[in-house]
Figure: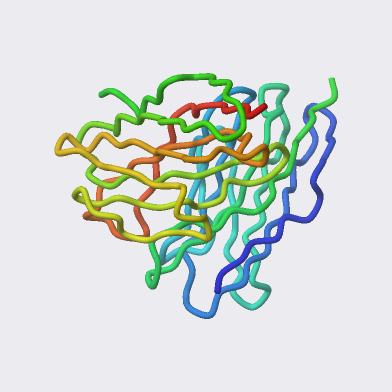
Length: 113
Length: 115
């Protein structure tokens, strides 16, 4: 079975500071990994995804994530936080043996001016 | 290109009632998945439809049922509503050709409140 753990349900950073949102997954087969962002009263928007190939994945709005198989991690980073980054972030895993996403419980990012 | 749309945006029902939620998939997408997102939680997979057939189901009771129509739009039906069914219901569509690596595109959701 697959599962996702997001460490830290709430993260606060100052504007301009590094953003680091943690995601660890459990999967018995090679995973496909996704990060989604959810703004208040909206659906989920894809930030980036890892399927195969290069383990450092770049996404929209300056975000990137690195797939580390040995650590079963897919942490999301952004060098410099912007006020508009304040939102809920979800990590998700999927495999080629199933057709559903398994989401983490989310991390709420607050950006302090 | 029109994205995923859902209706209604908000809904209030009482316990024991039945509800139908609707979803129009993004143009060119033939696969629709439904998720339940309780307050403060991540989305939980309910089921997926592909070419009008159920193509996978999460850990939800049979009173959660669905349909997909020839135009790939979809409905989620919930019978005998319970208080715990209060949640944001999200619909996501994807083109089947890409398989599990394919991105799912989410609609804005329907917020259901059961009193």
